[in-house]
Structure formats: structure tokens, C-alpha cells
Length: 190
Image: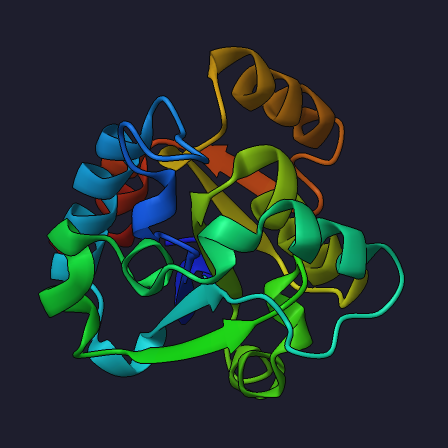
């Protein structure tokens, strides 16, 4: 096995109800990503998985003030901000941290945990936003990224493909773009 895959940290980024079917920030492939995230979780030790949630800052600065004002109905809805119902029970087994910016690397516990890992496996939503921001920050930190394309959802197919196009230029040196089945086969543990 490639040594970069030996000690992964799995990030489940912002899989909250607001991104599910019929909600304000719906991601078309949310259910597919959810299904594949659950497959991944079956094969990962609980100490190697971290969930994040985007929660609006109570003291936003700059353009985040406008963002929060525009999205007030979402920000004030507790259910929309919770981990998706289909993941909620499973997610209780894992560490979960809140963030109020796009990148998950704004969370110190993730930065600390990734130091002891050989790669970070990225899943979640939104491909062109929080996921992409996190991937770029991981690369800037010198961390090898596994981008599980079928465990990530964007607003729609077009934005998912655009995100993949951007990331293809960084592969294979900085990241590996894979599907869940290929990843699990490479990990050889499920």
C-alpha cells in the first residue's frame, strides 16, 4: 500500500440538513455523498474521523456580516444547522467541531490531529465552497489529500465538475481524486 494512505484522517465537512433535498442550500448529489460517507465510516476507527458544521458567527466581521444577514433564516433554524438526520446518530460516535468560515482548517483540533496522519480524506459539502477551501488549505499546509469525489456534493453537477477540473491540476503531487470503492480497495481494510 502507498505509504500516504497508511494513517488517514477522514473529514466529514458540513453534512447538515440545510444541504439535503428540498432545503435552502440543497446540493443535488447530497444523498449519494451521504451513502458513500456512511460506507467510509464503516471502515474508519472513530478516532480517525472528524465532523464539522458550519455555524454562523455571532460576531461576524466584514462581508460575513452581509452573509449572515442574507442567510438569517437558515442561521436561526436549529434543525437546518444539525448534522443530517441520516447521519446524526452515526456522527455522535465522532468528534464534531463548529466553524464559522469555509475552511475546516480554522479548527485547531483538526490542525493538531492532521499532524499525526499521512493524509486527509475529504468528504462532505459544498464541493465548490467549504470543501474546496479546506482542500486548498490542507495543500498549503503540506498535507496529502484524498478527494472522494462520490462522497462530496456541490450545489449541482456543473459546480462539482468545475471543482474537479481545478483539483485535477494539483494531482497527483498534492492530492488523489478517487471514488469510494477505489479508496476502500486501496485501504484494503473493509
